[in-house]
Image 1 (cartoon, helix red, strand yellow):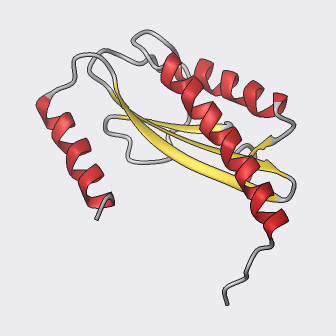
Image 2 (tube, rainbow, N blue to C red; image 1 turned 180 degrees about the horizontal axis):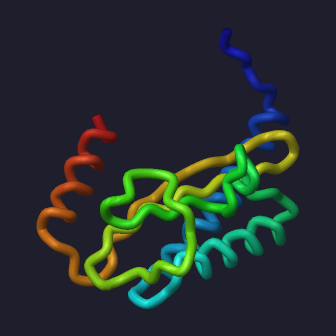
Length: 132
């Protein structure tokens, strides 16, 4: 069953999505060689809370972090920790924010520094498949 949303509900959804977009913009500025993934998680958690929202993933089925960070071989839902991002890494970040009864959720992949041709090709193929 498809549940149609009112204009007010769509505005609330949009607010959650704007928070996620702002968090991803912040992550874009942070992702660089040497930074620990848990530092990115902590900054995003603070950002979301400062927007009077809740990180959607934190505590979900026991998930211990506010975001998912997947580096290279980690396919999805990587848990932030002490791992440091390195030059040449392919880093995917998934962020969710809950506010006013609605979740916003988006992910973005970042190419860090001097990335191999193989990683560039992977991201190009995925992007092209999503644009179809």
